[in-house]
Structures are given as structure tokens and as C-alpha cells.
Image: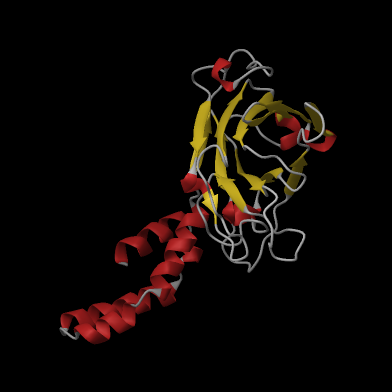
Length: 263
């Protein structure tokens, strides 16, 4: 508890106010008096877990995005991207929980993904190969970004600032998605095992430059035509979140985000 308190205070002193230190002092007095049961009750888990949560919000998992001299190829597979580009393989450990989702995952061909990232100083490039052996109209892929809110620990709920649903190739072999306000041009193409999305963002439109950070999260939902789901239109068989480092509700709170930093 003491080490955790010091780490949180180093990140933001306001996130570890005097009340947490007084709690530690009382616990140390109980320890020195060998009053072990009272010590255990005093420390408990609640305040420790709160400090862990604040540390996670103040220091989210960071992904360094390398600079490349030339744009990666936006057609074909992700193997052709530069070797130094970020390369994330997302399998079972990236599945997100939801009390109304059965999450009856059947293996990598059911739902998994490979994600690549790079930038050239003017654009951020993102490639996502989703393996999904049954595409349906309720499947989805959404890109979330948070310039500021993802590192704020105080409010009860903080919606994502940027939410971009990507059109998927359900009826056509290739579809596009554009967002002028974010300088986004994305293409989704069918593959034998699912689909590939390649996206190009303007760094200026995203407020990004080398050395700056932004919160990010990719949500992939999978329906598979599963019967007897919850009655809400949002119900799915399962969902995948990249990166996956749970805090609050991943579908609505920006503090689920990881952090991108451009090299």
C-alpha cells in the first residue's frame, strides 16, 4: 500500500490526498502493535483498489507508434507493412466482458484480430485484420479516441470525445468510411477469413504530432446470428477491445483507452 501510494502521488499528488496517508499511518500503528486482524480490516481492499485504479488512469498502457519513411501499402495483407510498425495479435485475452453477452468464444477463427500502426509525420496509418468466420449485419468495428478525458480520474463518467463506426463489407466486397473532421479515409475489404480495414488519419486533424499522446481503443463486436440475446439493440455474442486494460464501462467511458505516442 505504501509503495502504491508513493507511485500515485508521483504521477499526480492530487490523486493521493492526505486522507490516504492518514489511513497508512493508522495501519502502521496497528502493525507495530501486532494487532494483525485489525490491520487486515483497516487496509482491506477498497482503498488499495482505488489507488490501483487511479494509477492505471494516470498511467495507461502506452503503445509507441514508429515513424516510417514511406506509407505502408494499403492494399493486400498486413505482412507487407514495414517491419517496425506496431504489430498486435489479439486473441482470447482481448475479449471484453459484459453481463448480457454470452461470450461463447469458439477460437481464433470465431473472433480474433491483428492490428498494425505507423506514422510518417503527416498521417497515422492503422491496419486491422479481423478473423470472423461468420459476418452478419450486427457485427461492427468502432474506433475511439480521447485527446484529454482518458487520463482524468475524478469524474464519475467521461464519454469518449471521438467515436468513429467503420463500415464493414457485409453486402459488398469493399466499402469505405470517411471523416473529414479527423482527416480519415478507411477501406474495409472482405477476406476468406473475415475482413481487413486500412485507415489513414491526418495528424493535424487529430491534433497529433511526434511526442504527443492520445487515448485510443478499437472495439470489434461479433454477433454470429446468435439467438436469444438480450432484447437491447446493442446485444452481441461477444466483443473484443484493443488494447484491453479494463477500468470502467468500455463501451462508454474514455478511461478504458490505452495511450498512443508517436515517435
